[in-house]
Length: 187
Image (tube, rainbow, N blue to C red):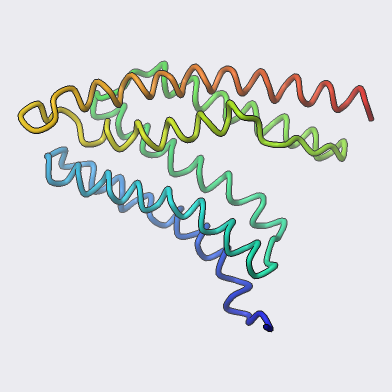
């Protein structure tokens, strides 16, 4: 089966859709009412699932590209940091959470840039994958917020899980650093 131009471009379009959804998700968070928060949480989940589908279609259609490899994690960071900034502005999370997550992402980005310059590839680490999974679970719960009359402690569960992702952010940052240092010594 021949791959069409549309199929080759599909993974990139899916990745970019994650970025284009950011203002929609953040805009839905702004009224900070239960209905809008549920809408924002669902939009966030929809945007988050594009992270799976861009990679799936890139592999399926043989459309893996350097642009896609570069933009996929950037799209994730734009989505997550934008939503975290809005949650911080709404007073739903602590500044320390955002500082640690953003600092870790910048640190990893720096290590990846240096590693690429040294022609070293650092594989994704388990703590980083768990961190992402915890964020994708926690953020929608925190967005929805306090709905004690329907689901008691939903916001507190989300807040706790987000702190777990913060701890995993630190752990994965250390793993990436040591992974780079080990790869550098062996090359």
